[in-house]
Length: 150
Image 1 (spheres, helix red, strand yellow):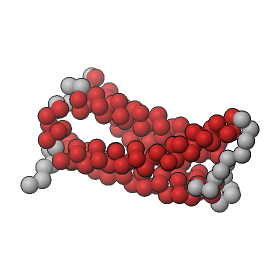
Image 2 (cartoon, rainbow, N blue to C red):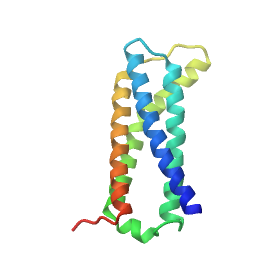
Image 3 (cartoon, helix red, strand yellow):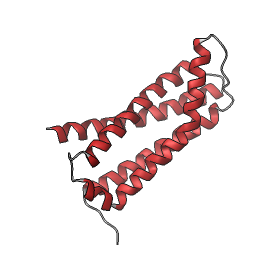
């Protein structure tokens, strides 16, 4: 039962996270064009952040917590390494938008204006992160079926 719940939460976090990061990118793009508002970006970002945390926790439990095929299986699986590489790249790409959005939250709480100069860049980053999430799902389906290379 625990395996099923972890898998379900993990997959749901992928789906909702994918939607949230693309939605955040769309709201960044609208903001860059002068037609959006920061609040929409921040709401989508909150959902994206929660999903990323759920993915990290449930993925870690599934791979290293004895709930699935076992740590040895995952560490020997090239697609697992691809999936983790994509996850790390997403985290690295996320640093600049995350830091900027923290500054936005602080500025908005103080009633100050925010600098939206990089909103178009952050829209592109968000959409690239969404693509990387799709690639992670492709890698995960290969892992689930025991696909190996060599």
